[in-house]
Amino acid sequence: MKYYDVFNGDADGICALHQLRLDEPRDAVLVTGAKRDIKLLARVDAKAGDAVTVLDISMASNRPALMALLERGVAVQYFDHHFAGELPQHPNLAAMIDTSPRVCTGIIVDRYLKGRQRVWAAVAAFGDDLDEPACALTASLGLDASRVASLRELGEALAYNAYGDSEADLIVHPAELYRTVARYADPFALLRDEPVIARIGETRREDLALARRLKPAHELACATVYVLPDAAWSRRVRGALGNELAQQRPDRAHAILTPDERGGYMVSVRAPRAKPVGADSLCRSFANGGGRAAAAGINHLPAGELPELVRRLEEAFG
Image (tube, rainbow, N blue to C red; front, side):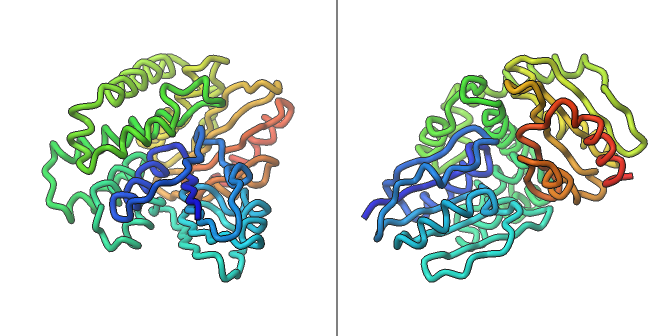
């Protein structure tokens, strides 16, 4: 019997898997990639009798590969908070899906484990920009403000490392970063002992400093649109800039675009923090779009469709 752990390479995917493996240790083949590299199940060459655990990637985007695994006798355990579509009914599938806007995969795993590795669920929630749920988790653990700030720093660093259009844009490959995290049951020891976390944090601060110098390409009554230059730093900073803007202007939606290799754009969308819904449905209205209610994206927006994106932002959030 062979095991596979398939996970989004961001903070939520890494921390969700880390919770599971702290509680249920298992040697497994790791399958992961950059944040937008979500069609991961197609890479899994599992056979009848094997077991696959999937964390933080959309079931809707992986349905054909998922059904193929189930039909050839592979047991699949699936944890996720993205749009899933209709859940398959299959004896080989155990699916724990919750698409509520204030839930991440780490929180779903925390429920499954009944809080036994909760500190890592808080890191996952901070990494997914779910500040209130994260603080609720840390409050249940009795952590002081200094330790809460440390967990936020760790979550933001793990999340930041996953952004980029290819692995060349990333600071550390997500599988390598997971293996580093997996050596620590204590997140505070990880922060203290692993210089890679500080390196990611410093890169994040440098990239955000560059992004803050830019002006919006479009200012709507309900939304702001930024078009960033074609550079590795801008591809990394899309999500962090969107989160920062959402914190500063919680009444507005935000779209961050970077040029892609096909002559169009990669897009990150944040729904207004005051009403964190609608980002996923907006992005799914375009080909190659998806995500969750509060934060979603489009993997390729043709350049000629930028005006239509602006129009639909106004329609969705106006």
